[in-house]
Amino acid sequence: MKRATFKGGIHPDGHKELTSNLPTVVAPIPDRVYIPLSQHTGAPCVPLVVAGDEVKKGQKIGMAKAFVSAPIHASVSGKVVGIEVMEHPGGSFVPCIIIENDHREEWAETVQPAADPAALTPEELRAIILEAGIVGQGGATFPTHVKYAPVAGKKIDTVILNGVECEPYLTADHRLMLERPERIVAGLGYMLRSIGCTQGVIAIEENKMDAVAVMEKAIASQPNLRVVVLKEKYPQGSEKQLIYACTGKELPVGELPLSVGVIVNNVGTAASFADAVELGIPLIERYVTVSGPGICHPANYLVRIGTLFSELIKESGGYLGEVEKIIAGGPMMGKTVFSDELPVVKGTSGIVLLHKEPHRAQKEYPCVRCAKCIDACPAFLEPTSLARLAKRSAWEEAEKADAMSCIECSSCVYACPAQIPLIQYIRRAKQAILAAKAR
Ligand code: SF4
Ligand code: SF4
Image (cartoon, rainbow, N blue to C red; front, side):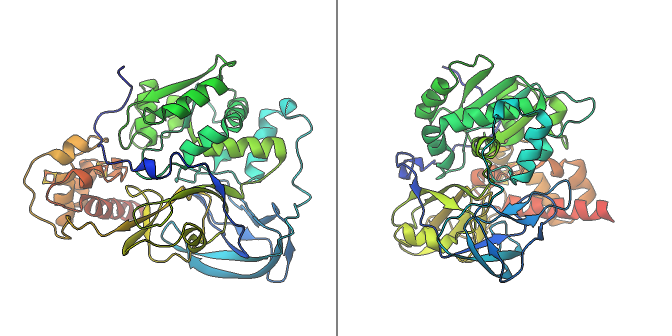
Protein backbone atom coordinates (compact mmCIF):
# COMPACT_ATOMS: atom_id res chain seq x y z
CA MET A 1 0.00 0.00 0.00
CA LYS A 2 1.34 3.46 -0.91
CA ARG A 3 1.83 5.58 2.18
CA ALA A 4 1.59 9.37 2.34
CA THR A 5 4.86 11.24 2.79
CA PHE A 6 6.74 14.41 1.70
CA LYS A 7 9.28 15.09 -1.04
CA GLY A 8 12.98 14.67 -0.28
CA GLY A 9 14.30 13.16 2.92
CA ILE A 10 16.57 10.25 3.76
CA HIS A 11 16.47 6.74 5.22
CA PRO A 12 18.96 6.51 8.08
CA ASP A 13 19.17 3.28 10.10
CA GLY A 14 16.51 3.53 12.80
CA HIS A 15 18.11 1.38 15.52
CA LYS A 16 14.67 1.37 17.14
CA GLU A 17 14.89 -2.34 17.96
CA LEU A 18 17.18 -1.51 20.89
CA THR A 19 14.24 -0.22 22.94
CA SER A 20 10.96 -0.43 21.02
CA ASN A 21 9.91 -3.73 22.58
CA LEU A 22 10.90 -2.87 26.15
CA PRO A 23 8.12 -1.68 28.46
CA THR A 24 8.80 1.72 30.01
CA VAL A 25 10.44 1.65 33.43
CA VAL A 26 9.76 4.22 36.14
CA ALA A 27 13.17 5.81 36.74
CA PRO A 28 14.38 6.09 40.34
CA ILE A 29 13.30 9.40 41.85
CA PRO A 30 16.55 11.26 42.55
CA ASP A 31 17.70 12.74 45.86
CA ARG A 32 18.10 16.10 44.11
CA VAL A 33 16.40 17.58 41.08
CA TYR A 34 17.66 20.52 39.02
CA ILE A 35 14.80 22.40 37.39
CA PRO A 36 15.79 25.02 34.80
CA LEU A 37 13.86 28.29 34.76
CA SER A 38 13.75 28.04 30.98
CA GLN A 39 12.45 24.80 29.47
CA HIS A 40 10.43 26.26 26.64
CA THR A 41 10.52 28.57 23.65
CA GLY A 42 10.04 32.13 24.91
CA ALA A 43 10.82 34.15 28.01
CA PRO A 44 12.41 32.37 31.01
CA CYS A 45 10.43 32.03 34.24
CA VAL A 46 10.89 34.19 37.29
CA PRO A 47 11.58 32.07 40.42
CA LEU A 48 8.84 31.99 43.07
CA VAL A 49 11.04 30.30 45.68
CA VAL A 50 14.35 30.97 47.41
CA ALA A 51 16.88 28.71 49.11
CA GLY A 52 15.41 27.28 52.31
CA ASP A 53 11.79 27.14 51.09
CA GLU A 54 9.89 23.88 51.52
CA VAL A 55 8.03 22.82 48.36
CA LYS A 56 5.54 20.14 47.47
CA LYS A 57 5.29 18.00 44.35
CA GLY A 58 3.47 19.89 41.59
CA GLN A 59 3.91 23.28 43.28
CA LYS A 60 4.54 26.18 40.92
CA ILE A 61 8.12 27.35 41.53
CA GLY A 62 8.67 29.55 38.48
CA MET A 63 6.22 32.05 37.01
CA ALA A 64 5.78 32.89 33.33
CA LYS A 65 5.85 36.66 32.93
CA ALA A 66 5.32 36.79 29.17
CA PHE A 67 2.63 35.33 26.91
CA VAL A 68 5.17 33.10 25.13
CA SER A 69 6.48 31.32 28.21
CA ALA A 70 5.39 28.50 30.53
CA PRO A 71 5.55 28.11 34.33
CA ILE A 72 7.66 25.40 35.96
CA HIS A 73 6.77 23.13 38.88
CA ALA A 74 8.53 21.11 41.55
CA SER A 75 8.84 17.49 40.42
CA VAL A 76 9.44 16.25 43.99
CA SER A 77 8.58 17.45 47.48
CA GLY A 78 11.43 18.74 49.60
CA LYS A 79 13.58 21.78 50.25
CA VAL A 80 15.02 24.33 47.83
CA VAL A 81 18.77 24.36 48.42
CA GLY A 82 19.79 26.91 45.83
CA ILE A 83 19.41 28.43 42.38
CA GLU A 84 22.49 27.86 40.24
CA VAL A 85 23.45 28.27 36.60
CA MET A 86 23.88 24.89 34.87
CA GLU A 87 24.30 23.51 31.37
CA HIS A 88 20.93 22.99 29.70
CA PRO A 89 20.28 20.20 27.15
CA GLY A 90 19.42 22.93 24.63
CA GLY A 91 23.08 24.00 24.61
CA SER A 92 22.89 27.14 26.78
CA PHE A 93 23.52 27.78 30.47
CA VAL A 94 20.48 28.70 32.57
CA PRO A 95 19.60 29.14 36.26
CA CYS A 96 18.14 25.98 37.83
CA ILE A 97 16.15 25.61 41.03
CA ILE A 98 17.75 22.79 43.03
CA ILE A 99 15.43 20.79 45.31
CA GLU A 100 16.61 18.31 47.91
CA ASN A 101 14.06 15.51 47.78
CA ASP A 102 12.42 14.53 51.11
CA HIS A 103 10.95 11.45 49.38
CA ARG A 104 7.57 12.10 51.00
CA GLU A 105 5.95 12.64 47.58
CA GLU A 106 3.50 15.16 49.06
CA TRP A 107 1.36 16.86 46.44
CA ALA A 108 0.74 20.61 46.40
CA GLU A 109 -2.81 21.65 47.39
CA THR A 110 -3.21 23.14 43.90
CA VAL A 111 -3.08 19.67 42.33
CA GLN A 112 -6.76 18.71 42.33
CA PRO A 113 -8.78 16.59 39.90
CA ALA A 114 -11.45 18.43 37.92
CA ALA A 115 -14.97 17.91 39.26
CA ASP A 116 -16.45 17.69 35.77
CA PRO A 117 -13.90 17.90 32.90
CA ALA A 118 -16.70 17.61 30.33
CA ALA A 119 -18.18 20.90 31.57
CA LEU A 120 -14.98 22.95 31.14
CA THR A 121 -15.20 25.78 28.60
CA PRO A 122 -12.49 26.33 25.95
CA GLU A 123 -11.24 29.32 27.98
CA GLU A 124 -11.00 27.18 31.13
CA LEU A 125 -9.16 24.42 29.24
CA ARG A 126 -6.61 26.91 27.90
CA ALA A 127 -6.15 28.42 31.35
CA ILE A 128 -5.47 24.95 32.79
CA ILE A 129 -2.77 24.11 30.25
CA LEU A 130 -1.10 27.46 30.77
CA GLU A 131 -1.06 26.97 34.54
CA ALA A 132 0.20 23.36 34.14
CA GLY A 133 3.23 24.50 32.12
CA ILE A 134 2.43 22.23 29.17
CA VAL A 135 4.84 22.65 26.26
CA GLY A 136 5.54 20.69 23.08
CA GLN A 137 7.33 17.50 24.06
CA GLY A 138 8.68 16.60 20.64
CA GLY A 139 11.69 18.83 21.20
CA ALA A 140 10.52 22.28 20.07
CA THR A 141 9.00 23.07 23.52
CA PHE A 142 6.64 25.72 22.20
CA PRO A 143 4.16 26.64 24.99
CA THR A 144 0.94 24.77 24.23
CA HIS A 145 -1.43 27.50 25.48
CA VAL A 146 0.03 29.82 22.82
CA LYS A 147 -0.78 27.35 20.04
CA TYR A 148 -4.38 27.11 21.23
CA ALA A 149 -4.94 30.83 21.71
CA PRO A 150 -7.59 31.87 19.17
CA VAL A 151 -6.43 34.30 16.48
CA ALA A 152 -9.00 36.62 14.88
CA GLY A 153 -9.87 35.56 11.34
CA LYS A 154 -8.15 32.15 11.62
CA LYS A 155 -10.03 28.88 11.96
CA ILE A 156 -8.37 25.61 12.93
CA ASP A 157 -9.87 22.66 11.05
CA THR A 158 -7.41 19.89 12.04
CA VAL A 159 -5.27 19.04 15.05
CA ILE A 160 -2.48 16.61 14.13
CA LEU A 161 -0.89 14.53 16.86
CA ASN A 162 2.66 13.70 15.94
CA GLY A 163 3.48 10.08 16.76
CA VAL A 164 6.00 9.80 13.92
CA GLU A 165 9.22 9.80 15.95
CA CYS A 166 11.44 9.61 12.89
CA GLU A 167 14.73 10.29 14.72
CA PRO A 168 16.95 7.19 14.95
CA TYR A 169 17.10 5.44 18.35
CA LEU A 170 14.12 7.26 19.91
CA THR A 171 11.12 5.13 20.89
CA ALA A 172 9.63 7.05 23.84
CA ASP A 173 6.59 8.18 21.82
CA HIS A 174 6.17 4.68 20.42
CA ARG A 175 6.05 3.24 23.93
CA LEU A 176 3.72 5.98 25.12
CA MET A 177 1.25 5.13 22.33
CA LEU A 178 1.38 1.45 23.29
CA GLU A 179 1.12 2.07 27.02
CA ARG A 180 -1.11 5.14 27.43
CA PRO A 181 -3.33 5.34 24.32
CA GLU A 182 -6.41 6.39 26.28
CA ARG A 183 -4.57 9.42 27.76
CA ILE A 184 -3.43 10.49 24.30
CA VAL A 185 -6.96 10.24 22.90
CA ALA A 186 -8.42 12.06 25.93
CA GLY A 187 -5.83 14.82 25.48
CA LEU A 188 -6.66 15.11 21.79
CA GLY A 189 -10.32 15.51 22.71
CA TYR A 190 -9.53 18.41 25.07
CA MET A 191 -7.25 19.97 22.48
CA LEU A 192 -10.04 19.94 19.90
CA ARG A 193 -12.52 21.41 22.37
CA SER A 194 -10.17 24.15 23.49
CA ILE A 195 -9.94 25.57 19.96
CA GLY A 196 -13.39 24.64 18.62
CA CYS A 197 -12.03 22.14 16.10
CA THR A 198 -13.62 18.81 15.21
CA GLN A 199 -11.05 16.83 13.20
CA GLY A 200 -8.17 15.05 14.89
CA VAL A 201 -5.41 13.06 13.18
CA ILE A 202 -2.85 10.80 14.84
CA ALA A 203 0.15 10.44 12.50
CA ILE A 204 2.33 7.35 12.88
CA GLU A 205 5.10 5.95 10.66
CA GLU A 206 4.68 2.51 9.10
CA ASN A 207 7.49 1.11 11.26
CA LYS A 208 5.15 1.20 14.30
CA MET A 209 2.20 -0.87 13.14
CA ASP A 210 1.61 -2.15 16.69
CA ALA A 211 1.05 1.45 17.80
CA VAL A 212 -1.22 2.01 14.78
CA ALA A 213 -3.38 -0.94 15.89
CA VAL A 214 -3.52 0.28 19.50
CA MET A 215 -4.39 3.85 18.57
CA GLU A 216 -7.00 2.76 16.01
CA LYS A 217 -8.68 0.70 18.71
CA ALA A 218 -8.55 3.65 21.13
CA ILE A 219 -10.35 5.98 18.69
CA ALA A 220 -12.79 3.36 17.33
CA SER A 221 -15.87 5.06 18.79
CA GLN A 222 -14.92 8.55 17.58
CA PRO A 223 -15.51 9.04 13.84
CA ASN A 224 -13.97 12.55 13.89
CA LEU A 225 -10.56 11.06 14.76
CA ARG A 226 -8.36 9.03 12.42
CA VAL A 227 -4.94 7.44 12.36
CA VAL A 228 -2.82 8.27 9.31
CA VAL A 229 -0.01 5.81 8.55
CA LEU A 230 2.96 7.52 6.94
CA LYS A 231 5.95 6.23 5.03
CA GLU A 232 9.09 5.66 7.07
CA LYS A 233 11.35 8.52 6.14
CA TYR A 234 13.35 11.22 7.89
CA PRO A 235 12.37 14.05 8.72
CA GLN A 236 8.74 12.90 8.48
CA GLY A 237 8.01 14.33 11.93
CA SER A 238 9.01 17.91 11.05
CA GLU A 239 5.98 20.15 11.22
CA LYS A 240 5.89 21.32 7.62
CA GLN A 241 6.54 17.86 6.19
CA LEU A 242 3.99 16.29 8.53
CA ILE A 243 1.25 18.76 7.60
CA TYR A 244 1.89 18.12 3.91
CA ALA A 245 1.86 14.34 4.34
CA CYS A 246 -1.34 14.33 6.43
CA THR A 247 -3.38 17.03 4.68
CA GLY A 248 -1.69 17.88 1.37
CA LYS A 249 -1.44 21.51 2.54
CA GLU A 250 1.80 23.42 1.87
CA LEU A 251 2.91 25.59 4.76
CA PRO A 252 4.34 28.84 3.33
CA VAL A 253 7.87 29.86 4.39
CA GLY A 254 7.87 31.75 7.67
CA GLU A 255 4.21 30.95 8.43
CA LEU A 256 2.85 29.05 11.40
CA PRO A 257 0.65 25.93 10.91
CA LEU A 258 -2.24 28.13 12.03
CA SER A 259 -2.08 29.87 8.64
CA VAL A 260 -3.25 26.64 6.96
CA GLY A 261 -5.79 25.84 9.69
CA VAL A 262 -3.68 23.21 11.47
CA ILE A 263 -2.16 22.73 14.92
CA VAL A 264 0.51 20.07 15.41
CA ASN A 265 1.33 18.59 18.81
CA ASN A 266 3.37 15.65 19.98
CA VAL A 267 1.51 12.60 21.39
CA GLY A 268 3.27 13.17 24.73
CA THR A 269 1.89 16.68 24.87
CA ALA A 270 -1.62 15.27 24.41
CA ALA A 271 -1.17 12.83 27.32
CA SER A 272 0.10 15.65 29.55
CA PHE A 273 -2.84 17.80 28.41
CA ALA A 274 -5.25 15.12 29.65
CA ASP A 275 -3.41 14.71 32.98
CA ALA A 276 -3.54 18.48 33.54
CA VAL A 277 -7.23 18.81 32.68
CA GLU A 278 -8.56 15.73 34.50
CA LEU A 279 -6.12 15.28 37.38
CA GLY A 280 -4.73 18.80 37.79
CA ILE A 281 -1.16 17.44 37.40
CA PRO A 282 1.34 19.86 35.84
CA LEU A 283 4.15 18.73 33.53
CA ILE A 284 6.64 17.24 36.02
CA GLU A 285 7.59 13.99 34.31
CA ARG A 286 7.97 12.57 30.82
CA TYR A 287 9.02 9.52 28.78
CA VAL A 288 12.72 9.51 27.83
CA THR A 289 14.65 7.01 25.67
CA VAL A 290 18.22 6.21 26.72
CA SER A 291 19.87 4.38 23.83
CA GLY A 292 22.77 4.02 21.41
CA PRO A 293 25.84 1.80 21.16
CA GLY A 294 27.43 3.63 24.08
CA ILE A 295 25.04 2.47 26.81
CA CYS A 296 24.99 -0.95 28.51
CA HIS A 297 21.22 -1.42 28.75
CA PRO A 298 19.14 0.80 26.45
CA ALA A 299 15.70 1.55 27.91
CA ASN A 300 12.74 3.88 28.05
CA TYR A 301 12.07 5.62 31.35
CA LEU A 302 9.31 7.66 32.93
CA VAL A 303 11.48 10.42 34.37
CA ARG A 304 10.92 13.30 36.78
CA ILE A 305 11.90 16.64 35.26
CA GLY A 306 15.21 17.73 36.75
CA THR A 307 16.74 14.22 36.97
CA LEU A 308 20.37 14.33 35.84
CA PHE A 309 21.36 12.50 32.64
CA SER A 310 24.08 10.78 34.71
CA GLU A 311 21.44 9.12 36.92
CA LEU A 312 19.63 7.63 33.92
CA ILE A 313 22.93 6.51 32.39
CA LYS A 314 23.82 4.82 35.69
CA GLU A 315 20.38 3.19 35.82
CA SER A 316 21.05 1.84 32.32
CA GLY A 317 24.22 0.11 33.49
CA GLY A 318 26.62 2.92 32.59
CA TYR A 319 28.66 3.70 29.51
CA LEU A 320 29.64 0.97 27.09
CA GLY A 321 32.96 1.39 25.29
CA GLU A 322 34.47 4.72 24.35
CA VAL A 323 31.60 7.19 24.03
CA GLU A 324 32.38 10.09 21.75
CA LYS A 325 29.07 11.91 21.86
CA ILE A 326 26.23 12.42 24.32
CA ILE A 327 23.24 13.75 22.43
CA ALA A 328 20.19 15.33 24.04
CA GLY A 329 17.43 14.18 21.66
CA GLY A 330 18.03 12.19 18.49
CA PRO A 331 21.26 12.08 16.51
CA MET A 332 19.86 14.10 13.57
CA MET A 333 18.36 17.18 15.23
CA GLY A 334 19.45 16.73 18.85
CA LYS A 335 22.18 18.72 20.57
CA THR A 336 25.57 17.31 21.48
CA VAL A 337 26.21 18.12 25.13
CA PHE A 338 29.54 18.19 26.91
CA SER A 339 28.65 16.59 30.21
CA ASP A 340 26.18 14.13 31.68
CA GLU A 341 25.63 16.38 34.70
CA LEU A 342 22.69 18.19 33.19
CA PRO A 343 18.99 17.78 33.81
CA VAL A 344 16.16 16.20 31.88
CA VAL A 345 13.83 19.02 30.83
CA LYS A 346 10.33 19.10 29.34
CA GLY A 347 11.75 18.75 25.81
CA THR A 348 14.15 15.85 26.49
CA SER A 349 12.86 13.04 24.30
CA GLY A 350 16.03 10.98 24.54
CA ILE A 351 19.66 10.63 25.48
CA VAL A 352 21.70 8.96 22.76
CA LEU A 353 25.27 7.80 23.37
CA LEU A 354 27.41 7.26 20.30
CA HIS A 355 30.85 5.88 19.60
CA LYS A 356 33.24 7.40 17.12
CA GLU A 357 32.37 6.22 13.60
CA PRO A 358 35.58 4.52 12.40
CA HIS A 359 34.68 4.66 8.70
CA ARG A 360 33.91 8.36 8.74
CA ALA A 361 37.04 10.50 8.60
CA GLN A 362 36.68 13.87 10.31
CA LYS A 363 37.67 15.61 7.11
CA GLU A 364 35.77 17.71 4.60
CA TYR A 365 36.45 16.84 0.93
CA PRO A 366 35.75 19.06 -2.10
CA CYS A 367 32.19 19.01 -3.45
CA VAL A 368 31.82 16.51 -6.29
CA ARG A 369 28.57 18.13 -7.53
CA CYS A 370 26.58 14.94 -7.14
CA ALA A 371 23.40 16.81 -6.05
CA LYS A 372 22.63 14.23 -3.37
CA CYS A 373 22.16 17.02 -0.84
CA ILE A 374 19.59 18.68 -3.13
CA ASP A 375 17.65 15.43 -3.56
CA ALA A 376 17.64 14.89 0.21
CA CYS A 377 16.55 18.39 1.24
CA PRO A 378 12.89 18.35 2.35
CA ALA A 379 12.80 22.16 2.13
CA PHE A 380 13.72 22.12 -1.61
CA LEU A 381 16.92 24.09 -1.03
CA GLU A 382 20.32 23.77 -2.68
CA PRO A 383 22.47 23.07 0.39
CA THR A 384 25.67 22.99 -1.65
CA SER A 385 25.01 26.51 -3.05
CA LEU A 386 24.03 27.83 0.37
CA ALA A 387 27.24 26.47 1.88
CA ARG A 388 29.26 28.12 -0.90
CA LEU A 389 27.54 31.46 -0.25
CA ALA A 390 28.14 31.14 3.49
CA LYS A 391 31.84 30.38 2.92
CA ARG A 392 32.22 33.75 1.21
CA SER A 393 29.91 35.56 3.65
CA ALA A 394 27.44 36.41 0.88
CA TRP A 395 24.57 36.78 3.34
CA GLU A 396 22.19 38.72 1.09
CA GLU A 397 22.53 36.14 -1.65
CA ALA A 398 22.04 33.35 0.91
CA GLU A 399 18.81 35.02 2.03
CA LYS A 400 17.62 35.25 -1.58
CA ALA A 401 18.47 31.56 -1.96
CA ASP A 402 16.04 30.90 0.92
CA ALA A 403 18.52 29.95 3.65
CA MET A 404 15.91 30.84 6.29
CA SER A 405 13.73 27.95 5.10
CA CYS A 406 16.32 25.44 6.29
CA ILE A 407 14.78 23.36 9.10
CA GLU A 408 18.24 22.15 10.19
CA CYS A 409 17.31 18.51 9.74
CA SER A 410 20.84 17.35 8.72
CA SER A 411 19.51 15.31 5.78
CA CYS A 412 21.97 17.04 3.42
CA VAL A 413 24.91 16.27 5.70
CA TYR A 414 23.84 12.63 5.92
CA ALA A 415 23.60 12.39 2.12
CA CYS A 416 26.86 14.18 1.29
CA PRO A 417 29.67 11.79 0.21
CA ALA A 418 32.23 14.58 0.62
CA GLN A 419 31.37 14.91 4.34
CA ILE A 420 30.84 18.64 4.02
CA PRO A 421 29.25 19.97 7.24
CA LEU A 422 26.64 21.78 5.17
CA ILE A 423 24.39 22.51 8.12
CA GLN A 424 27.12 24.38 9.94
CA TYR A 425 27.60 26.72 6.98
CA ILE A 426 23.85 27.20 6.59
CA ARG A 427 23.39 27.88 10.31
CA ARG A 428 26.09 30.53 10.06
CA ALA A 429 24.23 32.14 7.16
CA LYS A 430 20.93 32.08 9.07
CA GLN A 431 22.53 33.70 12.10
CA ALA A 432 24.10 36.43 9.94
CA ILE A 433 20.78 37.09 8.18
CA LEU A 434 18.94 37.35 11.51
CA ALA A 435 21.64 39.63 12.93
CA ALA A 436 21.38 41.89 9.88
CA LYS A 437 17.59 42.05 10.28
CA ALA A 438 17.94 42.87 13.99
CA ARG A 439 20.26 45.74 13.11
S1 SF4 B 1 19.52 22.49 3.85
FE1 SF4 B 1 18.53 22.47 5.84
S2 SF4 B 1 16.49 21.66 5.44
FE2 SF4 B 1 17.75 21.15 3.67
S3 SF4 B 1 18.53 19.11 4.13
FE3 SF4 B 1 20.08 20.54 4.84
S4 SF4 B 1 19.59 20.87 7.00
FE4 SF4 B 1 17.75 19.93 6.08
S1 SF4 C 1 26.03 16.13 -1.59
FE1 SF4 C 1 28.01 17.02 -1.01
S2 SF4 C 1 29.34 16.52 -2.74
FE2 SF4 C 1 27.24 16.20 -3.47
S3 SF4 C 1 26.63 18.21 -4.35
FE3 SF4 C 1 25.99 18.24 -2.22
S4 SF4 C 1 27.70 19.22 -1.18
FE4 SF4 C 1 28.49 18.54 -3.14
